[in-house]
Length: 365
Image (cartoon, rainbow, N blue to C red; front, side):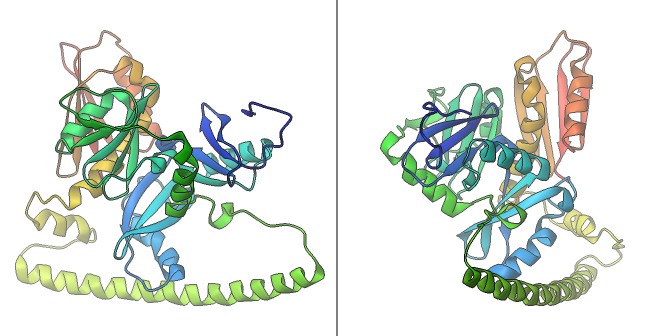
């Protein structure tokens, strides 16, 4: 499926997965599939731990309060360090990963690496690198993170992010948005795909590429490896218990500090929300961690309705993302928006004014 020459074995090359079709882009390259970023949530996660195994063990605890889904319902892929102690993480629903792998195996490239296509964009020194085409806009920022939104949501997202400087690698953007235009060299597309694989390969854990066959000697090594994995699991369980112990200790320390800073304030079971409410508003460090994942979830949920939506304004304050839509005569649009957001696990309120304008308020919690 998707190969331009069916007589050639599609064992290698860089492939793009678009509209559920695999299309080869570069031949004579290690097998790689660029999957749509709109179905992958990219997060920057702080994991200041000394080993890869310990970071993997801590990852579910580090992201469980940043996603709406149950951790068990999603596949977590740990990528490269984008800053000291800070790592790129990809999150994909299990059924989506299973479907992609089935498509790859059907096409004869079941061993291919899988990476979000936005990671093939050059990482900008500042601002955003944007590729807008076919009604979608892929964005990569200076931290190495990325997201995808329907084209009508690009400007509101750009304004809500503080109007960062933009280099466009796709369709020409309005003059006030686009600082400069860039061209992607087709010859460099293979190396860009390899750099994306190094940054984040989704084929990890249960979805890692499995090697089959081998000699009796290989099987002996496999048994040794299996024993090693079993020992590693025991160590990981110990690490998990240790992490829980550290978390309990830090909770006690935080409660003590909060009691000194705000005497008389009752700290309930949801200590994180209570302490967050005591902090001063503002501060740019938290905005990307909340804004980009939230706008990615909302835009992904509204993608099927993008043809009926005209975004007039987007604002982000605290943990709330607000989208104001132009008036629309479709009386069912409000309920369709609510159903789409609920189906994607996004907590939001949708209100229509008497004039027909619609306001969407989504919570990053």
